[in-house]
Length: 622
Image (cartoon, rainbow, N blue to C red; front, side, top):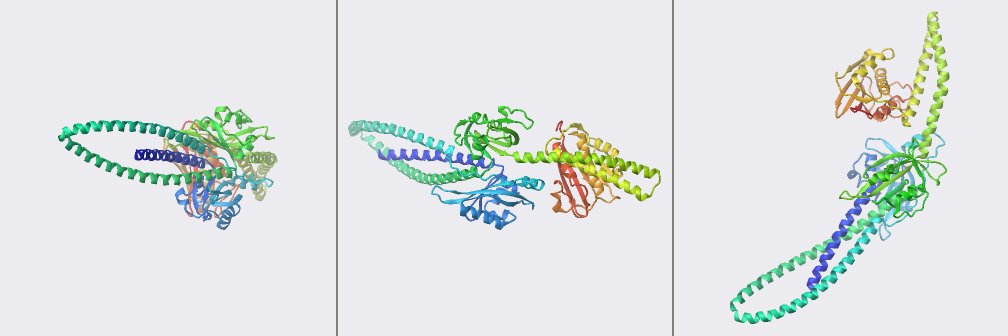
């Protein structure tokens, strides 16, 4: 009887361990999803400075897969390894580091400035087991610092760490408590069954007395009973062996459960450090739209208390009013957290937020993603709210400045150009000194060039502020280019342009004026930077649902280290290429191609020439 109770108890313990193991796996998947939704690079570092884990944003920033980063030295991924090493040592010394500026290297040789915010995380005994660091890409802020001297470049202080028990841990504890109650009820039932079996044994004993009496008269039956006893003994031996195996399995299961509990506590500590280190507002919803967690940045944004546990999201959102950038009220169902709870992923959508907590409206970039379990079930949603108000103000100030410069320069420049053209015509008719005629021609050419520079500034502001009005229409690329070459005959040396395109090709959807600007920029550059006796060849290729156009010249070529910068704003190639204009032509070309749903790239070899290519999708709209 005692042995039977022991078997049942061990079986119940083994079942409980298996349930806890499944719960631990779900908790790990939940935490991993939270880490991967962050737009910032997240890294965990051991006490020896070795990287123990990264998220997908770090893979993108370095160009390396996660498995190659883990196990390497943290400091080797920065342009100043000593400074990086001093940074993570400072975290171990004082417990955290705030807005620590470094330059993160990419595998292609480029680097980006980042601000690191990091803190230590500990185990249950309070021992430091590593550092959690969040890297914010500040490339855009660095560029705007050069344009506006008075722009403040210090980010808000990293929010203080706060501890909160994880909702998943509470659920698991409630589940385990319920399991204990179930096991206790099962034990009562088992005791009743044991009492019943004891009565049954007494009955069997009485039956055995009767059987013994019958056995005295049935000697032949004794041999059969003896054989049955041998079989029963063998069965008992087999059951004892199985019992020993189950006991060994239970020991292994106990060890695995201890390890999983330690891993769960470690992941919980990493998650707390992650939420505390992220400077953006972080909002976590349960599957029924209730808010289960908000970090301090989100609390400040909504102007509410820091205890949102299980409060309806509608109550928090009602504190202020969300609008689209064009001033339209945002419908409730379009709010990114609601869309994420329907299974949709929302990336960096811009909204205007008005709230009594702020004297002026705030511009927010909101990203949301669903949280799913291993079986694909929806567990909730995570939302990141980034305050882009300062960046929006900078863009507005730059647009105002460009509009002012455009208007104030164009008016007198138009007068200068008109007067210079009059002087040019008068000098030619009166056969004046050729030097005077060349001077007048130089003035006219310079004013045209300055007008082009001003137009580049205006186009750049429109493209970057997303105010570009595209009027797309189905177009056949070869016919469009042949017509454009004819129209440019008085402006460019079009006799050097050779078009090699199929007679028939799929239609692309593009804005004719913007496409003309793209072709004009690429063709003028190819003619300008190649010998006058060489041809510029334009080809087209149709593949993978795209029409790819390539413009190839036989010029001096571009150094490999400059290729990645050619499409940057205000960048002008060095070397043998003569620097003209503001360096905005290729930048605007890239922005126009991307606005029409395409992409652009360059291939070049010094001494052999360059090929600029762009691809537009074959579809009915853009």
